[in-house]
Image (cartoon, rainbow, N blue to C red; front, side, top):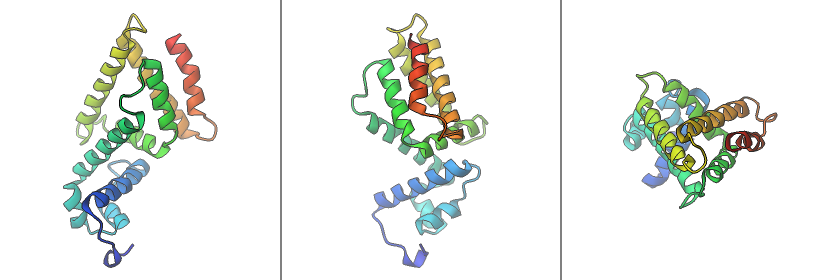
Length: 185
């Protein structure tokens, strides 16, 4: 869309368009490969117009991550499924419907291992929050809930990477169903 032909969108709609564009570009290229010019062009904006909505490239990354988390919470329902096994199965089923988002998360999680990455603190805090939540749910399931929580995250992450690498040859939900029998007995 040429900038001169761009439609004026309400701020909330424009922000959502920017986040969707950035999500696709980060999933494809990673944060370091993301160009604000490419996001602006994709949305029919100038870079200053884009920055008006997100503040900075780091601000855009935070908006993408927060949007992903909010969408996951919304999709899981309020309240989310009860029980560790049910919650994990619901997460895997959701992720199986959104490979682009899973790819985005995997790329950013790996990139953010570098301490100077703008999402380093976000991913460290998110990981600890997920482990704490899973360990709390695992208290009635395992004598070592923290260990089970780590095994769940490692298994989910590993299966998702295999699925992303070979989507036609890997059924994420079926692989999780087999893995959960080992994890939960």
